Length: 296
Length: 296
Image (cartoon, rainbow over all chains, first blue to last red; front, side):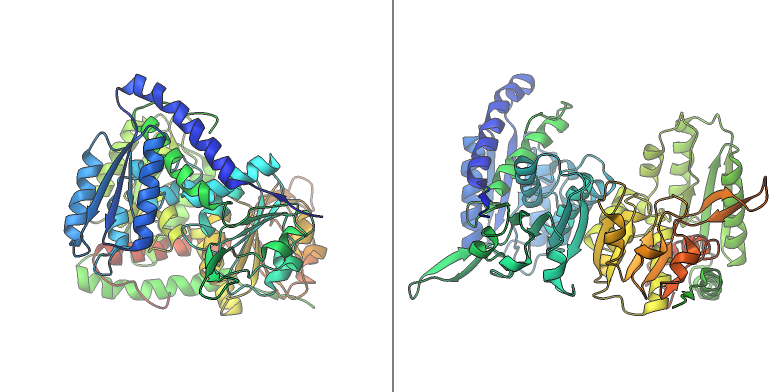
């Protein structure tokens, strides 16, 4: 069997087009475009790339992008003051504080200060709690995007056994909650799991989110299973001095056994920004008292 | 193999004695005893029994018990006003609104109105979120008590495979979070799970919380596994017109295979009130700015 490749790049492009198509009716109803504020503290090169990509995608979707770039020596209080101002600013529907923050700032305190209604990253404890108990939440973007790819590939997920490898607050745990909401049997595995290959072999759906290059091998995969590879790991490339990106799954091996698989890059990665825009549009609708946009 | 019986009644009595022993030092430091307010709306006979038991246990532990009995026709606003008054009352460390509430009252709105710092049932979304992300939370009593029995029976749970049957907000989901925090591999199974017996057979730890009498059979249990039976189901007894209580597990069958098992009654049941008192004592310490009492 050779797996069908789940084209996250194409799906994300389609989602972004559907989002952009919803913006004019929001503008018509409210007199303004949905707005996303991104806060970057310091000069981390990777963070600068992410923030630029987010800005570009936000503008392309017809939304307002507010960028706040602060020097690395910004005090925690100054950052909290900015978050408070953004919470109070009616033109801002989503607030994203780019992580990591400089070491003198307590990122938990900053994330806790964001209005949960504007928490488009879905990292606030109130959103984690709403997700856990099944109330209307803003859900972290990477697991949300992974779920969308799964539903597009498989349709109804009810009764399927999903094994999530990794238990982070950003991916593993919210992913497990989302799959449970879809009535999967859900197993959460991690570094302490005994016989991880044996556990993964049970899975109709494998979500790998551990950050270890090519850890999941082909003989761990049940024939026909769907593999979602959240990992993005930079490793030495074929030529000396060059690097390449690989996932948490050994792609060629897994693709030879799986029914469907996301590549790295081009799988889950592009869904993250698309879901950030989706969360911004949803937050804008909820804040304006409108029902959630459908068909996203 | 015949399973060791996990005596929840004895463990709960020990826990209550340890709690009672901590009360005098709290009184010495703060000038008052920890206080638990229980609110009962209407005349539901089972609820009346629970509330009486809670009152008695609270007083026996040397804590203050505040009972508020309201008529069934109490308006939602009147109940919310009472909750607000209890939130503001410094002598109240824990607030428990006995469920179910009469149908004209939105129980979600009432639970959401309780100060999370006084939410000794652990049902508030903020506490669900704190538990989910690993912050200091008040945790629902039944899964907390189940975890205590497991740790007492097994010691370190790290690396064990736990299968939780049931995905309620009150038991199954918080149980899974607690077991994950203890570094178990955790599987959450439920009514949509395919081959439930096969899934349960993987488990070193089985937690059954489905509310279906004797659903889990002996041949589902891996030899030597630990079985925690959260179910309390009333079924016809041996004599006509009599009833008896049974768990979600077929006790005799499971006890013949398991390494350890909780009986029904006398297993998890007695832990619930003991953990309610534990949460009240912990909430009192946190509200007073004291570190959590140890060794509970």
